[in-house]
Image (cartoon, rainbow, N blue to C red; front, side, top):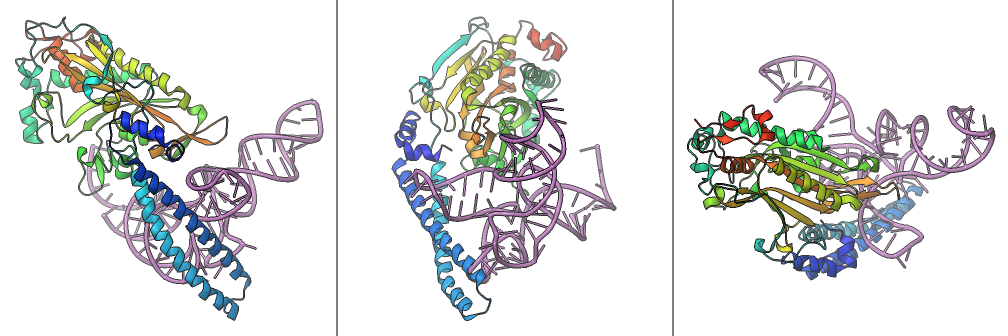
Length: 423
RNA sequence: GGAGAGGUGGCAGAGUGGUCUAAUGCGCCUGACUCGAAAUCAGGUGUGCCGCAAGGUACCGGGGGUUCGAAUCCCUCCCUCUCCGCCA
């Protein structure tokens, strides 16, 4: 949610943000609603004020006396009026809140103009896409792939998009998770093992409810949701809290399985390991002082890039344009790994600065040493990294003529041997 | 899952229908005393919203109700603790 004061004082800034993100929001309607709400609030508070002072007068009167009874009769009318106006105010307020939630975060000035993914800017590139053999195969075409990544058994047991990882496949998943966690630990991120089902309040605080209810799996008996990313439980850790400024910045990481329903995709996008309903991911999250958030965004992105460099995987970094930025982000970089067999870029991390947008919705604040008053923190997050697509890049880029896969040197201590065998 | 107890300001804890915008204690901040500190004394010390301001208003786990008036009564949900049951 944006600052309501910003909307009132600088509606043009909000209008420009909506335009830059290529969204369609009737800002004038929101402004009118805001004015209406404030007028009604003032009215109700005036009535309540009168009610309160009358109540205090009644204290002085003898209970049951004629004056007292007369006052009761008089106050009955006022009470009815207050109730009526309060109900109306409540309805307007609900509409106002809903309207405020339709306003996107303001893009940072460094975000490029653009409407479509094609207009994202290639920020940097690492490694060469030519090093991969032209004969490389998509990972699902590699001989023996189905034994280590068993999609048909997964479909039988659960459904499409829930593979079994078997033998060296399972081991490689575990090696990647542990590598990612250890690297994050070295970079100062405290490891957290969070709940992987969350309640409705947590899903709402990070904006997954009510709009994106369809993306999450729900439990039947309780109103719980399987997390689509560790961002959900992690961000909520400090929900409705005021932190000491000396605690900032807080760096945390968490490994969790992630569950996404992702209705509506098809074709190559969903083949093999490209898009799953359950996948493993290490998430990085920072709570920082507002003055530091862009520095911290860069260092988080740099850490995520470092993981790909250590694994020897070619990648590029995209700076997302306004139209592809996302509703809640001020600035976002996508990290895409080169998948040599499919000959395409696959997103493995999305590093974003939300500034105070998430924090306002989740009410995560710190007590400013300067003013002594609570202020909203800035939140930054990104994957570090998503496992299956990194896995498929390793399989495709490192496939050897003998049908084995060379394990990146950084991963060998975790995997236990230098090659993965499909046999 | 069953039975019982309970959720009040940073913490402890009073308040069971009307100046409660919540006593008191601890903690914290400022000042006095002191060479300095401790002790002591005085004052201050929650969050949100509306308002240019003065000020107003809301919040006693969440939601709803009764009443002229609710922290206090009623309904409902959530959570915590104790005991029992079950179980990695």
